[in-house]
Length: 162
Image (cartoon, rainbow, N blue to C red; front, side, top):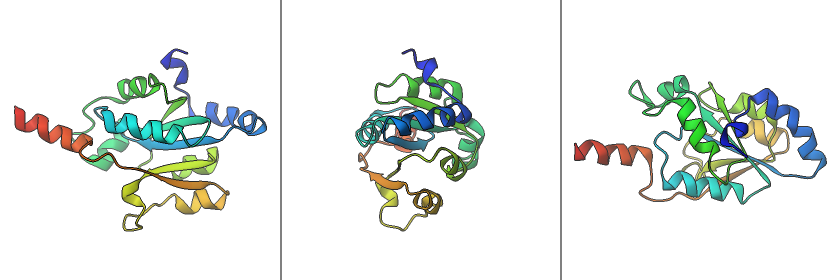
């Protein structure tokens, strides 16, 4: 499957959802900026895929990345980020979204499992979409962190090297 075939709109994914449910396939969702793809991203996506049959990655649009990370981000534009994520073996589908967090998408798509990073597991950082996922009977799972592997750390190293 070519990576571009993996890039679908939310409406296209929602249209596929009933067939996956009939087939008993577990749908896993995770999302993020994925700006400057690194091995921590790859490992997290593999971890997410291991939880089900279909992995859908929600990719923050350029506008939502700027709202989340500031005016200098993203470094890599949404079309390139989507193509790179879609090219990964663990990823079945990618969709770009404009919201800062995925509550509205999760309410419509209703994946079986919603994945967050382990930094949310202790309850100190809010998970605004938690009540949505639990409300439709979904599950929230926390993926392990891969220490020293982050876009911010990578950007800091690049900046110090220049």
